[in-house]
Image (tube, rainbow over all chains, first blue to last red):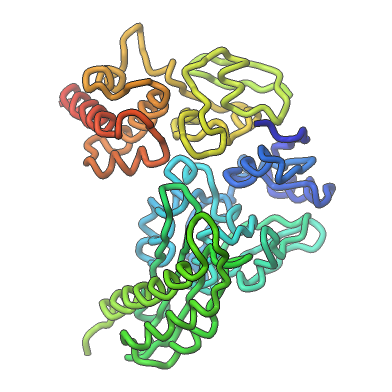
Length: 294
Length: 157
């Protein structure tokens, strides 16, 4: 299968990338890992007229801690996250999600920034970043840099808040500031399939009560869904099974799944409820394990 | 556009349209038909090649992206007329039936052993989880990669 013809520009610096994007229009697309874009082009679901290949731009890849954030370069490959000791130490939700993304070969090319910019409701990183309260940095040649909270990044199906001349350069995930935990649960029919349901959770304790809660859902709506009511029900409460089951029900109510080959809407809602309960329980155990006895 | 790619150690220059997929470039332009095309939708993994040493699905990479980089295909596994330890292990352990997935499986196995010379069965199954085999049930493929690991360890010890 061949995509429609397009112009290809391999850029070598950030300035060159931004200049090329500013000359383009809505049919100019950034080529990062290409693991979602190229399949869509082959199926002619996407027909960009120009691709700007940013893979040779230095400084867009890597994981680092800076200014209270775990900073993820946009070109960081999924497998870089899988293999990162820094991520294992810093963010349990990310560490749990990374090995579930696609398959090992796709993870060698696919990027964190590309996944978020693609705004696919089946994207695992979208839910992780919503649950963890992350933000992305977007740069354009004419307007400079701006920060977009991930809660404002996903507009609709395959539609992000990025302007055509903007490049997503990094993702900033707040570091834990107390005992915290998180995980990602995903039901898939086989390795590499889209999620039937995915659930990202994040919890941070404030004393013996929940100080921060993040819950987000993959594959059960037209975009990744942040389950704000379920999160709100957790804040200020003492962690416990009944509370987590209640949060699971609220999250299931926030889901908007469709019946398809992966299961009925009813089944998917039920999985959301169960995954949220299990995920919160695991996150709470992780956080409790970090509490230093008085 | 003109691209130069080092394929199995040999520099090759060609003029390709940007939309030419790396898998087609390797098979049609270079005539190296050991790289197969199966699903053509990033699922089956039979088109796997090593791009700068890392396994990727070549049906989901444009040839122009490989400009200036190096590619290893199954044809590059043999050195000086000798089968590699991975190829010998696939032969000895009957790690193939129809052979369609075999080039990809051996390349993934080679990459695995470079980073993990003594993989467990789980490590091997994890590594090949992006590659489909419709004949063997994977058992002999796993055995073959395990045998290649033992062979390599024997040599280096």
